Length: 432
Image 1 (cartoon, rainbow, N blue to C red):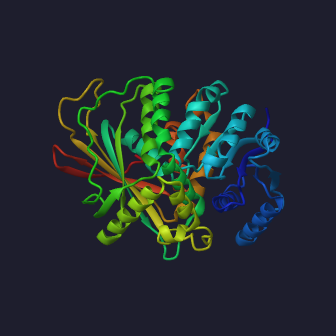
Image 2: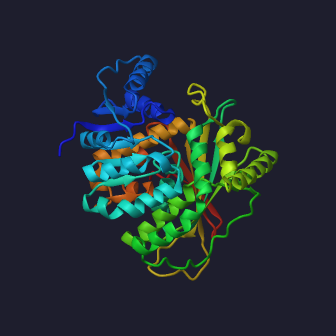
Image 3: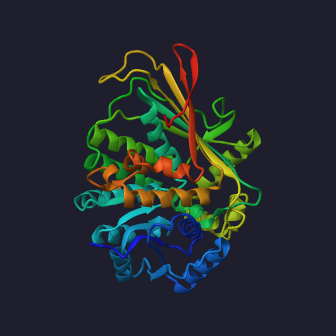
């Protein structure tokens, strides 16, 4: 069925949605797009403000009134659109009605979710139906978790050998005064409060979708201590508790189940600015995790985000302030120079260290990533997995031009290859 709009941004007046609308309005005039949300007045205000910022008349951009509590409005939105970009979170509360209506009404879907319970439950519930309809439902297409998940798949394809394991290191350089939106904080609170949901959910996923038993690796990747100094990123590191690892593991299970590709072990870490910063982060993280175990603790965390995050999260972060800074994800892949059909009997002899970096903050980068993900779904169906489904970015975009697209928007990747056996170090352009 022909759709009126190529792309619809749902939740366009929300904090993340505004960045996504700005990305579309500034750089992607070749497609027909519209915006959607609960308040038409707020949506008009967004178009006017962005139009003034970029000196462009956006009066021709249509508006759809849609609300997750109004099923008929979601039906209309999904029937009008080829691809929905959902920016309405926390997804635990507002995500499923959109996914459901996309699947029922034949619209593709991408989001910027970083909530493992939501992402994994949507895959369990809608994978088979999306496959039957050849639809692509792709979560975590923003800062969570394209840099790590798609980055690992990109490096794996360029490795020229067998990859055994990968460690990722996130480094953020946030400008003073920048803060993260409250919805992200709220998602983390409720995700940890309901963490017990993940065990039965993952059991069902392994039984229903990923029933092929994963092989035991030749050499196991050990998890590092809670605090350690890394030579790879030249700094003190702690475990990264975001959704990256869970997303990457589902990519590996998908690749093994449906492509018969060797799964990669993974651990994810975050580099801290100093030892003191790392110690404070670990302490505040422990307090946060303890408080999420109790309803009163969750209430206090939601009531006073600035206090319990030491200013990192805010109910009203400034959009103007969140345009500076940068981030990078260092991807250290270890494996063998040779590709073998069976197990290797010798230790790994090759390492590729790649760095995916962005000169922009997480919200600008998220907008770039999710918009280009939507464009890939719109324009490169021949390069996506042929059967559709509810997929991770790594599983969906492995064979597409996503990396080249985001490189044009200054999100780049480069790396160094190191042969352990020969002690021979060579520069390696990962695009070659």
